Image 1: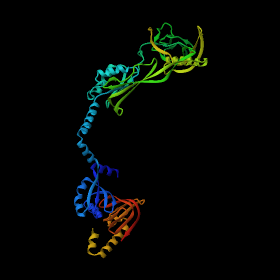
Image 2: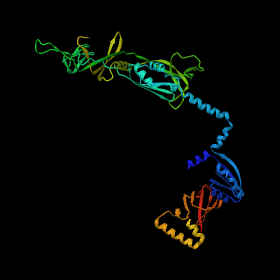
Image 3: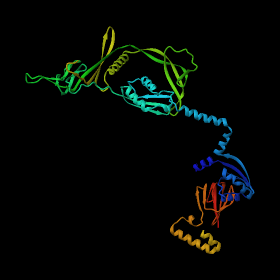
Image 4: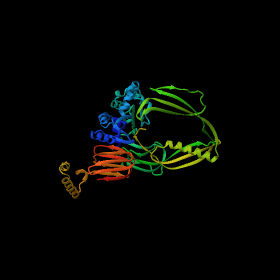
Length: 397
Length: 104
């Protein structure tokens, strides 16, 4: 039903009034001559309205003469009539065509470079390198050779494990996977010791090769040899053997951090006053719009960039840059002792955590308080369990 | 087509033959309207009526439609009757249909 309606709309049809005495005859003859009628409605005793296709309407004239009916068009509907209306408006059509061309033209340029996945490599560095290879906003899309860019970037930047460059609409999407720095390995045939990387108390030593020099429960300091690469012979007079010592040395380690306990904190409170600075972005240039320059003493700034575009990938080189300035009042808030201590302890704990490698097992935390020069300090000790052994060549440091 | 030709020669003979044909179709459980010149009426809730295989429209008013078929005239009465679609085989009537009458 919908399909038929759509078809009729595309082909165009007219709504007509047929006036006469032999309307049944009119319908019958029409059908006999393969003129398709629909929506026949009787409105008066000698009048009816009906819909007929444009093609069918042209065939109605002889039928009218035969049945002595009169036909009047009341409405023209469908695509052909709409199009013919626009035929007269040449400027409008030209505008539409130009618009499409401009849109097409603009979408064949690169307008954005998106980089994701980088942690240690700065995005700016990547951007610069990409620009040097011809992938920057404003260049013609079809000149960008993604394969070449991938190859040169892989050659240039050592930290890259993998890079993917793809063109999506007007965007270049760069996905980066960074290489994990490989540990410095000592060749398997070079004799070495396993030494302590940091201070700790030995919990367990599993020597795969070499001589275990420390016992469980022993305190070791940084640099101390844990598993020796020099194995003395039991038989006297025989030269000691030098091996490539390996093994795991699990030890308890401690990380300490302290923080002065302050009885007040300074809070940033937004006053509710906001100022917006609008800029127009046109082809990578920023044009500042109206803004009164009286800025606040303390403020939070939030940048909002709204790009015009079709969907997510087809970004156009126009946009609005809104900088929101929120005025901030610095409030000094007095804390009671409990709260102050808690805050300092939390701060110290966070600081200690930053020093601990992410995969380390934490087995306990201890908070203590000490006074120094009349000031109270929160001391947080985090106890961990980790492998502290690293290999070091014999004789070397 | 044979039925029609027979009819031209003699009505009684034709009628007999069509009756025999009908019987055979009934025995074979074939759709009748396909083989002999019968009309099929399908109706949905007294608002939509489809007449398949008709001969012509005899009368059309907004409250009364008479359709000619091979077996006689079907009279449809109701209100706001519209010929929604009309082809050489089918008529689709829309409106509030009150009654159907058959004149043989």
